Image (cartoon, rainbow, N blue to C red; front, side, top):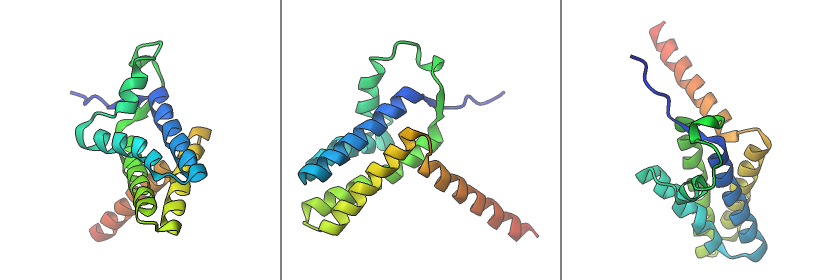
Length: 144
């Protein structure tokens, strides 16, 4: 039997990316790190419990059945979310503890990565692919 491939409808991924971008931009403009808590808490909940409140709320507004949208690979999105949550957490901690450079660098980094993904190039996907390629080559070298 073939195993069903888990996926997420692209519009839900996009809204999650926009929430990250908007929260990060508001944080950078206003210097208020608490804006980062919106995507951070949502992302952590998604990773730990499989429930991302941003995506769940956005799902209410889908006009078609979820399976009728272009799918995004669930595993890839989990990897991307781990990167985003790490950057959001470091940005938030930077603002909380007045580590200005850490705060602005990681907040700008996550905003830029999410915005570039919206435009069509997924940095997390590229990193994930390179990581898998590295592991493949490493295990194949051991076999020879």
